[in-house]
Structures are given as C-alpha cells and as structure tokens.
Image (cartoon, rainbow, N blue to C red; front, side):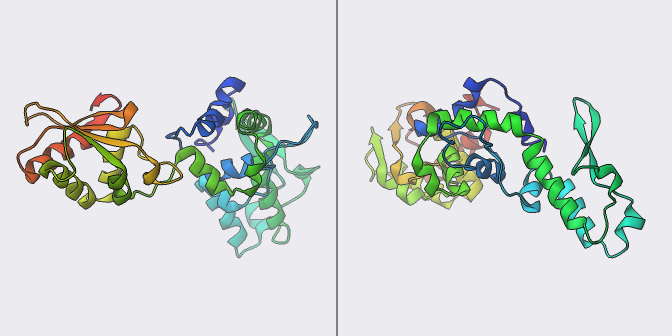
Length: 287
C-alpha cells in the first residue's frame, strides 16, 4: 500500500481538490495512482444527493486490485488459496490480521470473534476476500472519502456515470500513446518552413527514436510525457528557429509547448544534439 496511502492520508480538502481542478481545466498531471484509485472514485460516480451519511469510495475489490498496490501481500494470499495441505493445521491462521499503525502494529478482526475462528481449506476464500476488503476499503475509508469529495466537489458531473476507471485515469494523466505523425500535422513554425532541412531532419529523427526516447522528447518540449485524451492532434506545438551557434543544444519553452532549434548543419549533428538535450533534461534545467 506504500504507493497508495501517502496520497490518501492528505487531510487538507483544498489539496484534495487539485486533481479535480486539473481535470476541469484539461491540465495533465504526472501522477501514477493505481487503477483501484479511479475505480473507487467512481463508487458511486455521482455524489449521493442530500445524504451526508452515504458511503463513498467503497467498491468490489479483488486480488488483482491489491496486487497493484501491494504485490507481496497479494502473492501471499494467492499462495494461501493454492495451498494443497491442511491450512488449519499447517498455517495456524485465524480471522484477524496485524496492520501497521504509526510505526507499530495493531490487531484487527476481519469478522466478529475472528480471533477464535481458524482459517481452513473451506473458509480461506472468505478470509482472503475480507482481507482484501479491509485493506482497500475499510482501513482507508476516512482518508479516501475526503479524497473522493475533494475530487467530486470540482468535477461533479453526471457524465462520470458513463466512464470506466481507465477513462478517468486518461482524463487525469492523459494518453500514453504517442502519435508523432498527428503532432507533425498540427505543428506551427517560426523562422522555419516545414520544407526546411532542419525541420525535415527533426521529424525523421524523432519518429525513428524508440518509444522511451520519444517520451523524453515530449517531456523536454512540453513538460509532460503524456498527451491529452483527445490525442496529439489536440495539442499546440511550435518549432522556433534561433540564430545562434550550432554548438548549442536545443532548448524549449515548456509552458508554451515550444521547441527551440538552431539551424544545424546536418542530420547527424541534429540527432546528436537533440539526443543529448532530451536525455539529460530534468525539470527546468539539466541533470
């Protein structure tokens, strides 16, 4: 749960609205929540009207969901389900678990009188199901409810009923699929014409890059390696000529999606300079 809980422990409702504001304003965020987070944000997809006591953020959860946030625990529970021996005699487990709480451990019963109910071959599926529900729903309910209400206070819309968790993730993070042909079609030029050698070299080189290097190029030029949910054809992008030494590396104005390219003498020189720039860029400078 380490990748999931730090965000859910935020108590400032203003901070919890930021993700909703980003979606509302079509701003892509470089965040990586597990899929279960978006599944919970749609449970229910619309905030219950005039019912402050309604439970929110609770959904049916599976071992696959748990695996996305705690693969070791999910693996252990799968091993329990697949165990071919006598579970009760060999593993000596009951319907209570120990969970970390502020640096110590707390014992929690998964069902009433769980300490006196042994896990057997017959009831181990129930044990696993209750364990997963506790981790992904009950143990983080208060924190996730704040997250849920913060998001929906900005993005309240009946349209969410029609979306799947993966589609909500794309609204937040953008699409991971790069289509440089689509980007080339919407690119504008300043100081260059699209027929100029430097421009032709740039597109030939960028399209020949492996996927990871293409993502670095997008990150270098726009500040994000994700693209809008509508595709790269929805982006604004400009390549600007700068009359400077061709020993200079390419530069960018990420706030405006602008790539600054000196008029390099050859395709080879452009590829070398561009590769160095995008491979070493970090934030607003170089590594």
